[in-house]
Length: 336
Image 1 (tube, rainbow, N blue to C red):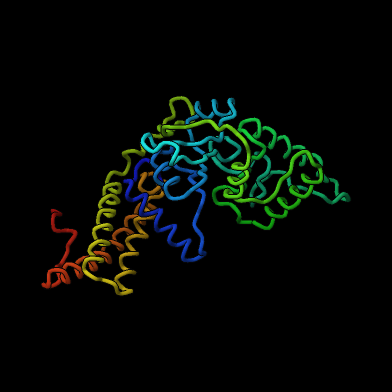
Image 2: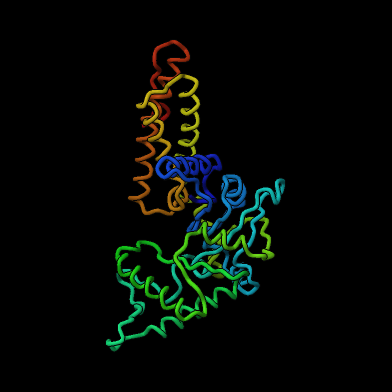
């Protein structure tokens, strides 16, 4: 989700829905946060929605270009984020940058093997003219050592893949399999497939004094005089609609409990709004940075969810008041 434009309760509701889905489908609780693309990062995300939801790691890519440059020079691309002034170390979370600490996310330069990429594949057939195992290993080792020089400890994480990728996963994984094999034969560094949680565990086992971060990462700029702050107010109508929909969702949820609306149909109706509201927290939705047809779709989903959930609210009010089911009209105050 975005971290600047949403109301904090909407962020909580969205996180709750996501964790609920993961628990129901896979029986596990997430232990790391993956906020790689929002345009700046809030202390609320680090304390309330990372440490206090049980995360032990939080990863993201976009921070101010001057902050980024300083962190890379001082081996501070990974750090402990102690974001709450009142709770202090009780709600701190290990945090790190993604994308080879380049200010975004994606693989190291030269190691994108997806469809349409022109990066050199790993060719290990010695009978072919483009056999290149050693040069590719050297490139990988160079990238690993460069990234290691900008953080602390003995482990670094390469984030393979990016937007609209893995359309040719076979090619990507074939090259990853080869580079992992030959890197480990070479022996200068060791590499393996991993996950953010396994990476956090490896970092926790190291005796490292991490830099401490106590405030937020706003505003975000990726160059001189290039501040990403216009989205704080862009598409104000959608921002208000999202805020109102969040308030409606919480009102309906409480009325459904008080009014004993327990049927599967009622639950599904409330969840329709919950899901639409959760999707609307995306960093290109409530932020107001989506294309127009996508923005229309976010609003349509919210309208559909609101219509379904409002019927549950009306039914619950009727159950509580022992009177006829009230009729709710969103257009009562609209002038034509």
